Length: 150
Image (cartoon, rainbow, N blue to C red; front, side, top):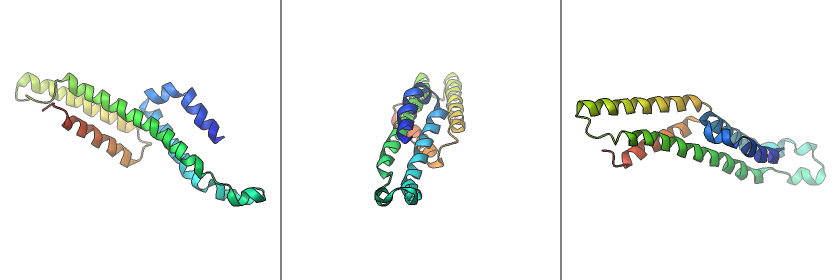
């Protein structure tokens, strides 16, 4: 059943997982949830297994597979979202020269778009852990600060 999840979900829902941020984070969360429960699954059903398996059966070998699968789509989504937001900043030609009236209005518009984009992502990613959400925002703003926009 677990291998079926790993095989079918990314294959059948690949386009949706890659394109829709909320679904990507839900898939990531599902993989982490399954990984967490795989730690104790063998011990939960130990008494119900036949004699040789009751002492050795665990599912810990599957944990890295689920974590890697979830992390792959998490990283892919982070990269896509960061690139989309940085593209907005790039279209503005950077955030410099805001002392000019027209330039200030244009940069202000771009900042509103960035704020709206981050707000929409935070709503879509409410299934995520707070740490991972803050990690993305931190990486995004560091990317902006590292660019030659100022």
